[in-house]
Length: 281
Image (cartoon, rainbow, N blue to C red):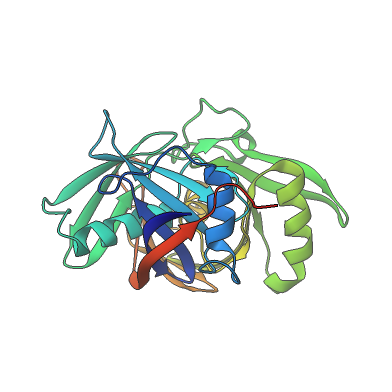
């Protein structure tokens, strides 16, 4: 059995396990199985996934993330903030900024006291992956119809590295959970149910691919804000509050059309997990 030192952190009820492979030697493993075992509520730590911190030639370090079900995610907004909080705690976040390579880009983290802000970069249309969303974008550039058990729905199809479908409603979000699960599995996307409260606030419920219904999702919140800003429903260039089941996130669409996300992070526990890579007969 292989001993692996880990730290579990949480933000807005999004719980993730960080394995620092920069400071401990970890051989090549079946990381998908490792993530499923460590995330399991009975034989693991009941998390939404596992993050590996690795060396990078492009940035200060690299993040590789596996979801609760063992699938890979290309990036993770909440995970990046949790990494920042973790590095701050172990005195590895000494400069005002820090860069982390993901599977899709290099993200910049900034710190102010104990608040970590992540620049997730541009939002893109899933209809035309080369098209960056801007204040001049038209809904036809990123909105399309999909078939559901309740008829055809209009969804905004947006990429933040991860793929997201954004659905607007004035109804109770709980009524959309079962359909969100079907949409997520059918299209391999994160599904965000959005209600606009006013020009600086929205309510968001996320069904996350590879995880399920989650307390919050940073990239889904960014996709929801990108959709709402380009539609003229939320203000750009000002702090926006996204209310999720797990807590509040603060996002900004800045002057460069980048999406910045910040929020409170906490350390839950740390310890040693003993991983059995091959099952015994």
